[in-house]
Amino acid sequence: MATILQFDFPYPGPWGEEGARALKDLAESIAAEPGLVWKVWTENEAEGIAGGIYCFADEPSALAYRDMHSARLASFGVTDIRAKVFDVNEGLSAITNFKIA
Amino acid sequence: MATILQFDFPYPGPWGEEGARALKDLAESIAAEPGLVWKVWTENEAEGIAGGIYCFADEPSALAYRDMHSARLASFGVTDIRAKVFDVNEGLSAITNFKIA
Image (cartoon, rainbow over all chains, first blue to last red; front, side):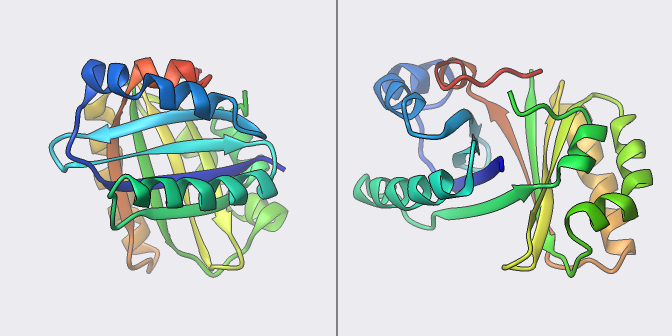
């Protein structure tokens, strides 16, 4: 069953196109993670926070990635990491036009 | 620019198909909100939390919805509501297979 993983944490930049250049290799690595359907990269420069919403094909893949990525972020010096895993309510999500991929 | 809105909050159920029946009318109303591209309904019964990830076509629509929905949830008796608005980093999100719709 599709599983949503939310990450957010304090982030000092870089943002936008500069961030895209700096994190391109990481993004290519994440695109190859087992079970990943997609990740949207989220950022709020005014609040100094960033993160991502991930759609995984199944919960075990999401949980394994959550643990690995939390440790990786910590190794980058990131603190106050918030990571939450959710099931998708498929009936309600269909009404509100959500498609997994 | 596409804007992501994250909501989550403590939730006692109903979950899954029972929740889908109970909240169908609300979902139909949300589907008609100005600027909404999609909402995925999220739930974690083990942790007793639920919410949603929304994709809006622009930030003003996301902010207006955030304020309205926060007040609506409060009127339902929901407390400890977490609502965060984010820009999409389009370059990185494209690498990780995210498509707006």
